Length: 434
Image 1 (cartoon, helix red, strand yellow):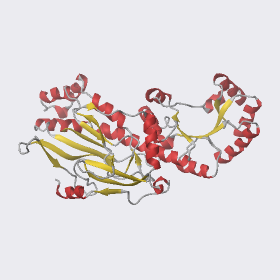
Image 2: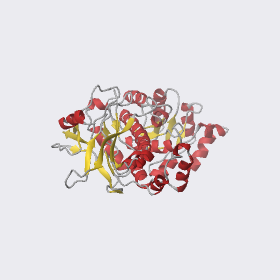
Image 3: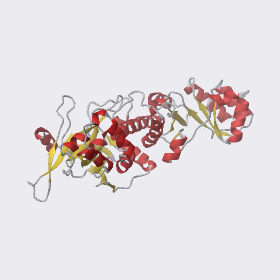
Image 4: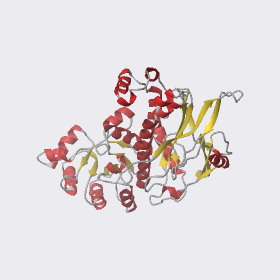
């Protein structure tokens, strides 16, 4: 497409693209926007290097493409604008998560990367938010790297998990790269390597005083009693299998009776929001939940259907005084895949600390007493907005979730509609755009 745009003298056309989600994954009543930091880094750094261009030249499909196009690619960089909803914000279907305004080739070439990063991290952050809500204040640790869809997904999944409300990750590299708390315990193989569970615990505690012991390799009740009898210093125990609810209650009593009320109990092992909600509602004495596969893969619905669509173009025109570009709104007419035309803004109205409604408008509309959600982060290829830390994003996310109407925070609520209103001007534009 870039070569065809170039060959047909379209490279100076300005493309307006928006990314949005048409429908939510299963069991979701909202999404948590995530991935913006990686998008910004990509936009300001992507380039076509010599070996990239030589590879493209070697492809048969490019055999008729002029040298001028490849020279153009060799100097290409992003010179456009980016608006986006801040990471950690709540979004609903058809609301733009981000908008790109750039020369058409620049805007088109970044599509796949943007969709990949935003779709994945938004999916995982949204799942993490549900898990955190289910825990009712108990800490959630992201444990999913081993089941994530590749090492990079493990890192970005850990990041998205923190945005959604997790307190830490078991992925040490994610801790190093992103600056998030990394923690872990031991594997069953460590315990099995020693002649006895007692020797395994002792060896671990000597290296890591006040550590967390994995107690269900053989018998969790017996394991806790062994650790207490040996007088080992440990701060927590982890249960990874069996009837976690009943085991945790029995272990809590053993620890309390031994004067170890400060020792924490952690649960892991194929947990999800429903299981956690059930255990919490039954007063399981669990302080931490480690959630892996279900979180890092969003197992109940493992793909987000975010799309990146052309909503308008700006072409050079001599017919407008003081403005050399004419804006033409665009909309897709395919049945079931229609979208609203034109660059848009989401105006969020909050009253009494509760989200009342979002009003989806054209970007030049003003709405009284509203909070415009899309902010400009890149102008003419340069970053103009400070990016928050991962912890600021997490705090913002928890705040955003807290102002949702109560029914949207319930695990079993599947909305038939959303608190989103379409402005009259946008409705009118939809009828006349081409």
